[in-house]
Length: 423
Image (cartoon, rainbow, N blue to C red; front, side, top):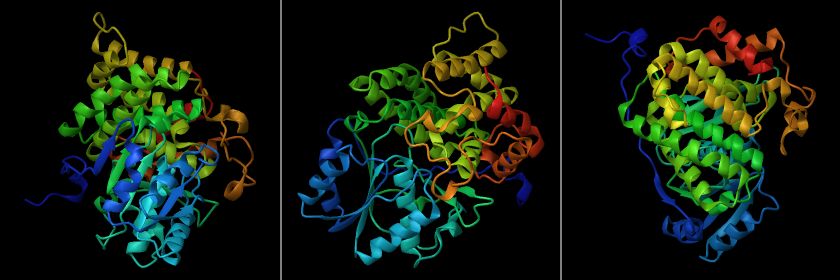
């Protein structure tokens, strides 16, 4: 009997998606030029954002050029990469006659590079046409090496990328694409490149990792091959994130978060995400806030929302976060996992809610600048905006894997608390 369309999420066909080749560990970035040359690159578009003055781009450019590979710098990628970033990078790639892409940074650089590759492979089609699952029709696109300077995104590992559609700034839309053809050819994670990541970004990106690990752990997909990675990543985060934030040159902590990032991405690559990411995407679309910061504020609220659907999984998560649950019931242990996330949030200086975020809250806050000029310097926490965020979430491709059923109305209290509530 043929399966009905409305049964797809009740009885999902579970797919295991591939991972790219990766080099992990101290000194991995020293091999960048060699690896680029081995992939056949002779002239690369180096895509990045936010690293001016760090010395990282200059160092990596030297390692690439030493191997006889030319470098064309494209340092115009924005936080929460915009459709224009992908289109402009694709145009630069073609005008400069490049034959490969190297992205350096976090998810913004990697995602914009994935988007640019899609545009190049499809003769300049608008990047916004690729939202959703497996929209690529040309399976061949430029070679891509992704070098991470944060422990957070997982984009260098996964088949996903996220772009903001700016064609209607009255109703901006941040969308997700999943496509096996966007996998990078080589991922490079070197903890030495994380040392200069600012304290607040280390914390925000760490919560991004926790979202990546916890969402497949409780996902409606319940994808068995993802569960081990998800579980171990949560344990690594609890052990290493506070130290990485407050002792940034601690190699053990930075290496621990490197591994946590990498295996959490492997978990969500096939195990799915959920409302944490859906809320983060919606808030980014309207206010251009840091993705990891959004995840940090959303995470305990979404965990609370999902508790009734996954008490046992949250109870199993609590000991991984350092909670002694031996004398607790399953429900008490599940509640304690949420409490542990809140405690970690407070320990790392995460704002209480979106309404508490200010321009001075972190170094690269771009509220009321560029495309978002005129929006003001504070988050709109009105009931109208709460509903707008909920509607955006319902159209997000991460929402269907959420373990608890979602509607615009059911999400409103959770979003309202994220906007103005405190723990």
